[in-house]
Length: 210
Image (tube, rainbow, N blue to C red; front, side, top):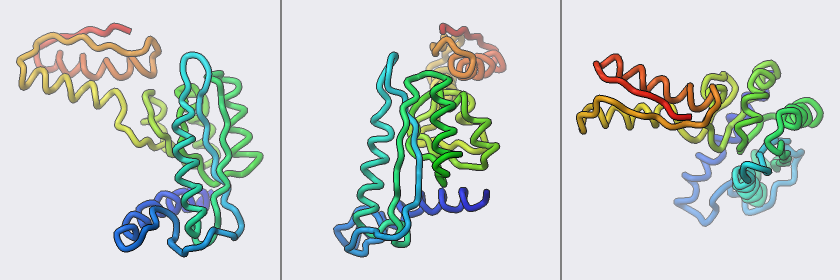
């Protein structure tokens, strides 16, 4: 639905507008009305992974803190953000269930602050089918950067690796590189192969350790 993309963009632009207002007032977010938002809530979701191998809940915690500030300062055109968070526990089945709950059951207009490699890989196709935008806190797998419905606040391992390799070849004279990544196709293999291909295209070589 087009409204999902529009409201997702509105949420993102709210932070930009608030940054400009902050120069003239103490408000750091929201519409700067001096009053808490009291209109019809806008439901926004978020999914993090919190189990072995790690706790990525800081991603949604940060988004929740920002939305609380937005709500305390006028919300989005007077409407507060109802931010709902799910933990996929790094489990593909739970990741799919979390997305279905937030997208289909609660009808979130967007997902913000996602922090889970598992859920991005599992749900990229579902987000596209539902026409819902996802603003992730950090991405490290190919689906996150190649999906039309996921954006991230970081550039990811592929351009990071490639930039380092370009510097090593052009400035340090490197002729052979070793790239290290996670042992999964959509991370280590995906992000390292571009660097190896670059070196080989310029007469060098490379290998990967995943």
